[in-house]
Length: 247
Image 1 (cartoon, helix red, strand yellow):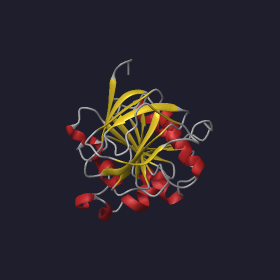
Image 2 (image 1 turned 120 degrees about the vertical axis):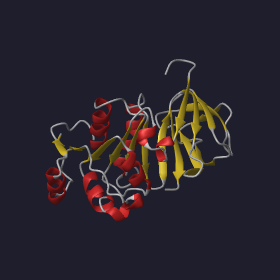
Image 3 (image 1 turned 90 degrees about the horizontal axis):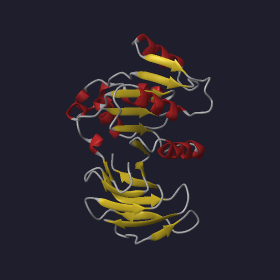
Image 4 (image 1 turned 60 degrees about the vertical axis):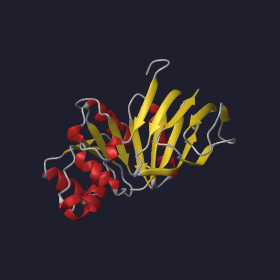
């Protein structure tokens, strides 16, 4: 994004059929409890990836017809990748027999399974409109912080983290318009300068900011409330945008 440009963050991936979009959608399942919206997005994704133990989650939580909308069976993943130290043997055998590619990347200990999956998504096919990672907010704190770090690492991609009732994205420095899904997002939301101090102004929140400094250990825009159909954010540094998810 060049200087002076406005970035627009939408949540069309929550409802639109992938076939109706002019750009593909990638879904990644991590090894944590999956939100109910995972089934909807997984079915519509044009690229489906399980991160190691995420295959267990697909097998246990989404594989049966009772977990899919309209009782349609869950599509198979296109790939299962990662260290493969969490996937259960019977799950690996099931997907191997179904023809799913399973790739052991345990030789690479400098990247997480989520990073491996995002790299895979970015390298295969057309650049996705969104890469949505489910199960990204739960379990060990170091895992959650690493997942948040991926938002900065892949700031050139539209990476979305979902789980535990949250949708989290990067709002890059500059001017950004956030258009939440009216039925599935909010009202609670927040903006956090995770990587360092930031000065920000907003429009569309209950407690808007006007060239306000935020920093860890100081003021943070947490427990805020959506009050408009879109939120305008202007900041001199990247921010974490998090919003309550109803699905």
